[in-house]
Amino acid sequence: MSPARLFVYCVLATALPHLAAAQSFTDAARDAKLRAALPAVDRIMREFTTREHIPGAAWGVIIDGRLAHIGVTGFREVPSKSPVDSNTVFRIASMTKSFTAMSILALRDAGKLSLDDPAERYVPELAGLRYPTTDSPKITIRHLLSHAEGFPEDNPWGDQQLARTDDELSQMITRGIPFSNAPGIAYEYSNYGFAILGRIVTRVSGMPYNEYVATHILRPLGMRSTTLSPTSVPANRLAHGYRWEDDQWKEEAQLPDGSFGAMGGMLTSLSDLGAYVSAYLAAWPPRDGVETGPVRRSSLREMQQLSRPGASSVVRSATGALQLNTGGYGYGLRVSTNCLFAHIVAHSGGLPGFGSQMRWLPEYGIGIIAFGNRTYSGWGAPIDAAMAALAQTGALQPRMAVPAPALVIARDQVTRLVLNWDDTLARSLAAENLFLDRSIDRRAADVAALRAQVGACQAGTGFAYVENALRGQWILPCARGDLLVSITLAPTTPPQVQFLEVRPAPTTGMVSRAPLCPGN
Image (cartoon, rainbow, N blue to C red; front, side, top):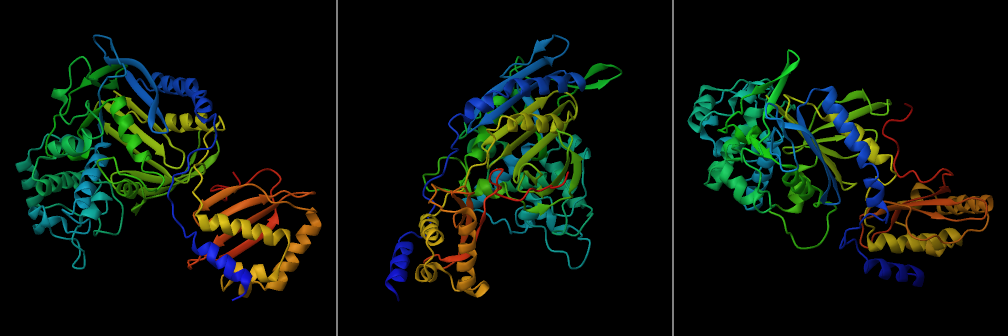
């Protein structure tokens, strides 16, 4: 082995990938810039509630793990004109499903179940189901978490099942459940499936579902106002639900808690839900450090990953541009991608009298939550517009991935190579494929031609973009234009360069990833 290759090998061997620290957002003015958009967010929300005849509403913006802003408008109770305030408790309906999923993963992490266990192991009533085909697999917990158990979509039938008793749920299952699909092949939203997950929480934990959630999720997160029972909310804090009909608000009865509560029974406040969403955001990025939450960070990230794809759609964005939305369901959460953001996590909730949504961007550290007390008040469009207002500040930038030490060292060595090509150094850095893909002579000639085009270059500082621990880009400033250098390291020990590209840098700024919806 040549001295140069031995030197590089030893350096890289001591710098194997290790993500010890989480990189924070680098814009020192980030918080102030984002806060500058909050008046626009308030205007968007208030105009929506007026246009949609929503009696009362509350919304919040979460920035870097804290509820940074609260907005309220209207009445929590119409006849008395009692106003909504920051402590008003609203029903959040199907957003409850994420609490159920979190409970299941907490039990999984404790070694009390596996996501691939057949559900009938814990709910024996399911053993009598008549499956749609002879080759159908048994329904698993994972199927239930991702709406892939094959049951038919059951909105709004599920709304009226909240009061069912445990005995009634058992009888319903025993009588049989029709299938719209064989398990495991398609997404179809099922409230029934999440009611069964609530039964599994009860059977596995040995305590009622609502007690388990309160003990193992709500209290550890400091969520003191969150409950499954409307009657436990102080009267002066409870939002009453309404429908808009005949040019007036008509009150809807508060649906009671029962065996279907695990799919949609929760009530909460802005501060409580802000803490809850912050727990999901705090799970990013993966890092070393003590676990402080009731559920492992890795499990919270698992919930926020696409498990079952759903249908895609093309819509007009808040700016009027065509936008592709694609994604599906994680575990108790919707996961999607659009033209602006590669990873969006959300869930809405709707019951007679109420509509709500929570949405956050893991790579950006930002979330928005909203409640309204009108039947199925849909918050999708105003939250889209609010996110656009935050983006227009220029401060809504993604968290850059943390480069492994090996990537930092490889960057410095490749920079030396580009500035002053040396075949010995090149071979010491290269994985076995690099010069088979394009010969060392041609690569050297390519770099020389670029150098002649742009003139004298010098080493830059840091990365322009880090996609992951072993892939990054950086700029070399040159006399007549800059060079963009991109590398990917191979899965070897030590990690060596398997991909190398040197080209003129874009004159309009870095493009870290291809646009998801070009050509609008």
